[in-house]
Length: 208
Image 1: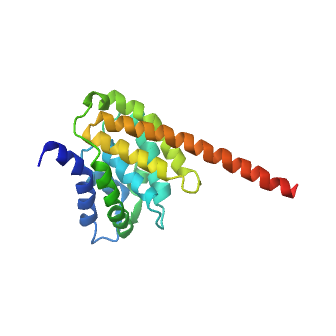
Image 2: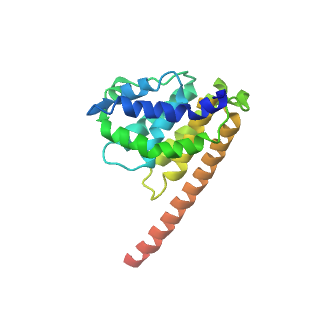
Image 3: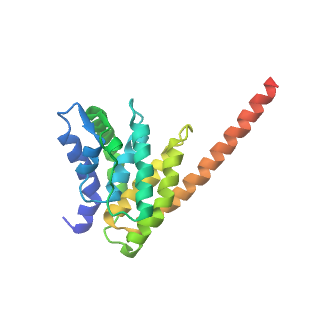
């Protein structure tokens, strides 16, 4: 197997391993999950935390992962090399079956996106300084994910997955694609908010 193919399959392999490791447990802490991601930096963390928003399931996943995404963005902006969770988040527990369900249902999508990345392509664009700049769109994507917009999670999740995979493989071209997707997501979210406000105003006019 070539180095490039290893890079493209690393994220899905790691997620599959996590699902297998926690299969015999009832609950797992968020700190444990982040620790299991290993030394892959922020890329795998972005992927792992974006997945629950792609597949709606019962539980506090949205609130917890949304908080962690904001934390990731802030630490990227500061220039951290690795995600560090505060105690109140690290000790937060979620159901292991819920985590496993999210991972197994999302793996096919992650594998499809992995086919797009190439290890080391335009590597210079994925250095530490770029991580700090990427923190800005990641923060905005986390905010968009928190908004109660119907079908509004598709764009942010896709953007975060591509950005995360690009950071894992150090693929600068994929990173640029992720940033373009982020820009498109922000524009589309603005359109949805504007349209929703117009519809709400129109409906309210009937009750005035």
